[in-house]
Amino acid sequence: MNKKWLMLAGGLFSLAACSGTRGNTPESSPELQAQGAAQAQAQDSRSQNPLPRPDPDQVQKTVLLNELHHIHQREIALAEIAKGKASSPQAERVADAVIRTHEELDAKVEKAAAGAGVELGAYQAATHEQAVMDSLREMEGRDFDRAFLLSTRISHDSAAADLRRAKKETRDPALRQAINETLPALEEHRRQSRRAEEKVKAM
Image (cartoon, rainbow, N blue to C red; front, top):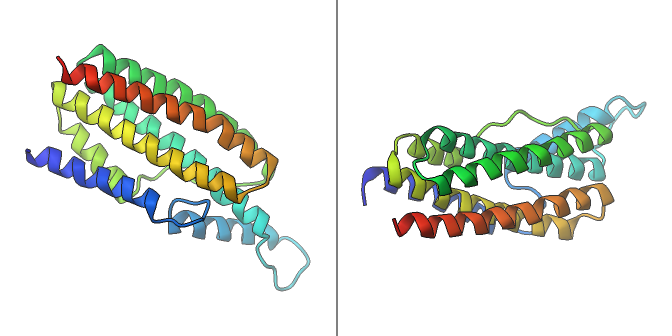
């Protein structure tokens, strides 16, 4: 196994591990949780209360909508790398499907956030996500296709697990609808990536 594959494997391991260590919280990182609390507190500070406290429901909305936004932006960023490097029609089709679907879903998240008074943060790749992207940019040909499809499959699987847990934590109809709209796309992209990965391996 060469150095590029080792770097990719490390990033993917971190991505998968993050999904299994979050407990029963509807967020994917301490940074998103802190962001949600800070934004909700800033919104509450406009009230007349001299000692404003964050509204738990608003914190949850902020965290979860930012999590959904992050998922969509991450998958788009991964797929955009493939648009310029994929060497097989299988990888190209997966990249096209990921970009198209996640752009549509992210537009809905942005609309929901505007309606809920939630500010969405600009996408910043986590350390392990950046490591995967950097490794992909260094690969070519069939190695790239296999690595991209593997990355897409694992990231979609991890995101689906996060959102299934988050769905259990929230009773907010808008948030549950956003999750319900996202989960089928994540699962379908994971299946598409698996099928494409098997075809590329067989070439």
